[in-house]
Length: 376
Image 1: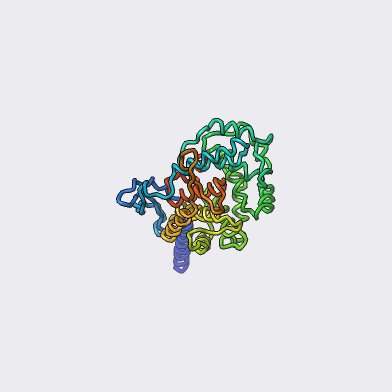
Image 2: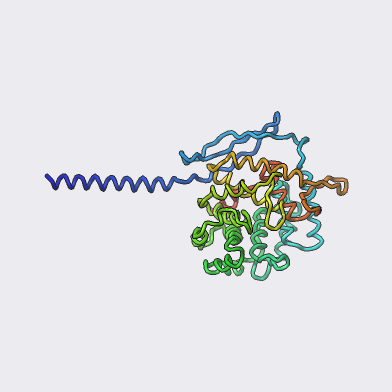
């Protein structure tokens, strides 16, 4: 009888432990929300309001559910920032690299046109021009800009992607310098403590339509010390933003996301903008908005209302930096803080920020859905 009782208790104990293990594993599998679908386009502005279908994931359900999102709006006649004016500004900007070859500016022009949702004028000529600038190893040089070759190359590959094109010359030789973790680790230590590894991940995904074989080793490395998820006196949220991009494109859960949100929200200034260590506030504000918008769309169960409030506040900053100028009887616009006219970086950052905060109905993909679709 004692043996029967002991055997019965043993069976019960094993069954209970197995159930607990199964429950724990199952809970871990559903602990994080999936990346929800992109929201639909905003409706027309009617009675100062627009609506769209958006998606969010509640932490208790761990599934994406749709809801109707409403925001205040202005009619096209009332808008202070206008797509048509910014588009004219980009065309003036284009002349600077048509007269003086500059593949980086050409790539930024293509990105600006894509974010404004405007057709890329002279697509075939731009492709031929970028093809002509390839180095023998297939990449593009950053020497003229004091950038790494990888920094310039991944941005130009994004331009090809936006034009639905491929570089003329094979790039295997260029990427052969980044096909092992040892090589990438050395690059990461040399340039901003792994912050810029996302250049390689993006470039690799854009060219090969797959993740590099060492990507798990990258995540293991950056998760050894998570101090970069909070405010950094040297580079603010810059490093965290760049590392976040790699998590998003790989569809990985981001560590200590609330720490990062706290830091970025706390750094927003009274005018709605964010400062940056290099002194370019347009750059700093657009990086911060990019980060918040990425979290808002890709990790929708995290503090949606706080993030939306910060994004909305940024509109004041962009209004103050928006400038128009009559050129050949047309109104052209650009963003500037220091008086620079049609400057390439500040202008692109302004367009990107205005697309993210809803000032313009731009084509901005914060979770890189188009790139990931090519991978999967």
